[in-house]
Image 1 (tube, rainbow, N blue to C red):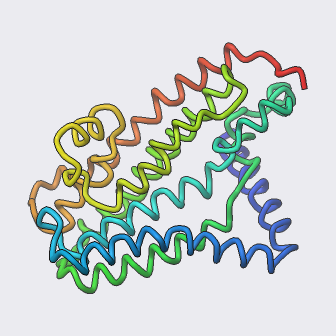
Image 2 (image 1 turned 45 degrees about the vertical axis):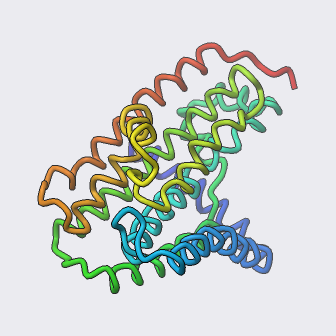
Length: 263
């Protein structure tokens, strides 16, 4: 069953990609637009370090390394989990009624409803910034540090995906997306430009206990930059994937109380 679900999901993606490729000029313009949107965040960092040599002990290249990883995390989540971000329209138009009567898991169908290939523009920009950060941060790359980056991407994608799922679950009760959730999704990407400890004690506690941003950003970054030898920090992003459990439970709670919009 799991293999068939995976094949079906890949089939969904192939359909969306093929349809998007029918309008190549439009797709390229949207990819360029995504690059320009995230480029403004990069400019903010650049101008900050034109005035200051470091921010709370972090150099320009170290901050770029941090920013690029968070941008990749968010871009991956937005690319694959865009269906949850657009879920308000599915509920409002009555499309979720059809999803429920089909013999497939509703999460699989929501995920397969959208695939944002245009987010590859952000991914390319993030990779360029990442390579620049690597070349200038004097990090001694080892297998465990490479593994740390892979786990950070996996854990960060899971955390942002969980937040998109919560956003979608609220739509069962409101029929509209709640804009305050953007504080945690797009806001999380913006806060991620700098290591979380830059924002003070209260923000650090919130980003550890409530939404585990620090597990996918701050702690593994410390190991990546050689500021600690605690190997446990390498695996903390995997622990952050447990955040998906309460997100899924809230989703199930919403599905159990769903009433058709009547559209």
